[in-house]
Length: 252
Image (cartoon, rainbow, N blue to C red; front, side, top):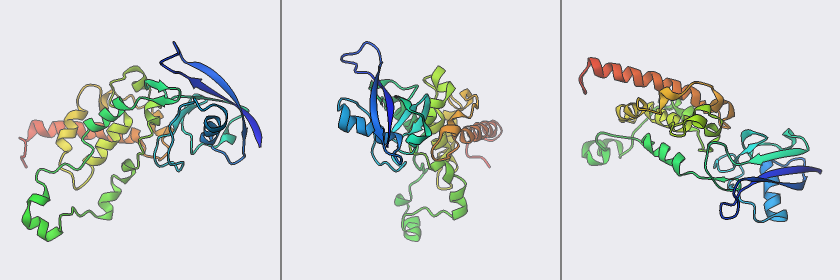
């Protein structure tokens, strides 16, 4: 067991004019993750500390925080990766609700704007012949799944938004995770909403705002590679635009 100084950024909008730092001496076990240290503070030292966490298995994405200035999934980050003093702050580029808890509404609105669901011109449930033939499912081969599977692994942890220099300067930027999600559905063989999403991608503050710093992919805990998705989405949006100039909608 080693004692470490955990410095947490505190902010209570009902009491504080600005964020402040508070230090805690924490006896850390060798196998602890950073989240374990924060939970120890909450449970044993100061119950007023506010933070989010849930699964502790790097699946839910809720425990993202800035650890020594870098966005990290704290349930996955070993306490032994750091020295005797660790600075923990709320994720950058988000409004702070309290302490380490950030506001998610803007982030979720960006997700919803890219239509993150299967779009069909005509649902099979309304097509009796197709319903009888396939029992209402949309079949897909393993090869078709493989084309977009990587981009479907996002856990909405928001680390990429904290790392993105464009989000830092342009808060309205759609952002890497939302674009990667929209691109994932554009690549899905079952989907028919590509034209709608590409129209969104060609709008202001979307794919062409990306400067390809690659910071989003560097911090992604699931190797989604949102930077690659953004640049592929740029190409597809331009190709779609060019086709519409040459061919009428629905043309061959």
